Image (cartoon, rainbow over all chains, first blue to last red; front, side, top):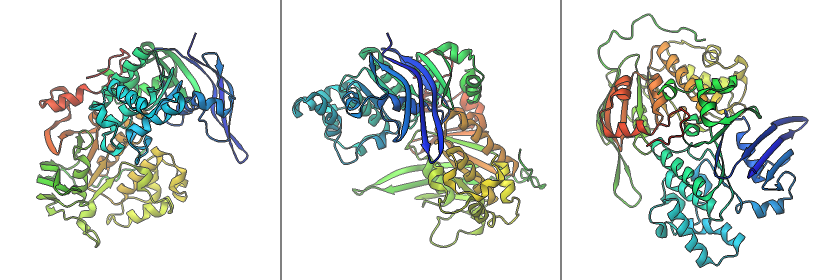
Length: 263
Length: 272
């Protein structure tokens, strides 16, 4: 049984009299312990799919279809109930680590806020756990890091802290929206290794949103290709990349700088 | 696709480099006193009708070097020469005429275009700088694959990729001899990156200019550059033809950068 099963998900936004369809009949599954990569050009609806799972669709958006999370229906769920899942069982890591943190609160405060809210743990216990988790995501000197502010870290370190913050409540599902796009290639490799490790060790169902086929080729187990809100191709990593069935997937892979594919 | 604007006089005739950096350094003052050396003793040459790729990780001084070349930053030593004139840092006055031949395309097209002026006005501003009048607003828009009616619109109605093409058109309008692109493709998605990079190369070379293309993405640079310079912590560690850097890198840092590029082979191997 899949951890998350998306069926015929539609999302539309009405501005004035024009109804715009962002997602059309999107269906795919996320399995525990697997990384599902969603690829597509900007505006293809890949981020909106992730946000729909988190219950963070834009205000006024009409959502229909079904997102089944381990037997619970997420579409049409009251905001209060969704709040109890978000951050605990469903968590997310965003694209730009520099703007994902509050600049004036310490890492320790920001990492433990949601943990304490959801588990009612004491401040001391929460900080202890935060240190432990930072160690888990290979942040150097976690006991010092906890008292520092976001600007004192590099982008790669901040992204490791963002991952730590996302897994502190032991979630089942992790949505990673372009987690390496803002980072250098050399740092990217480290973050991808961390993502793979967390996915395997914690049996997370990971949704990895990216436009980079290099990233998908490195870590994704299955790949979903989207175009204009439609899923055009779904399959295991290797066949999708080496022998794409859909014309659009082929054009995406061919548009990459030749060097990456041939080598 | 492009209108040919190549002038008949051969740009390769002159043996002197178009742009030369000799032992250039740059320092920033740090908050608590002390100085940070962002660029350290860099010597580089850019020939006529040549595309030079400049690669390195964030914080290695690539952007500072670009700013130095455009006169947006003061040097802490060394000289920059453009067409045998020294490049002086930009002050409050008008930029010297001869330095208008160096034009820059910035990383973030959301910040580099004026949101309150129509595209036509922004391009016209740049067109008046070009003594040769090679372009018109219409031919510029056509060259970067945008519809002619784009001229009447404001920048907010364009996507990121379209805005970057407007920024490229604006830089070209001034008739540059050196086009400096500071991570011009970093804010675009992977499928657009290669396309915009090739477009920049074609437009620069077709109009008889040279280009310095700064990027942290080696694979795109390989596609479009004739020569590549690799930068680490303010120093140029290796310069060579693109083929040579890619197939036979000498410096360990270059090797490390190359090894970190994920391969699109579907094998599930994390690089590095």
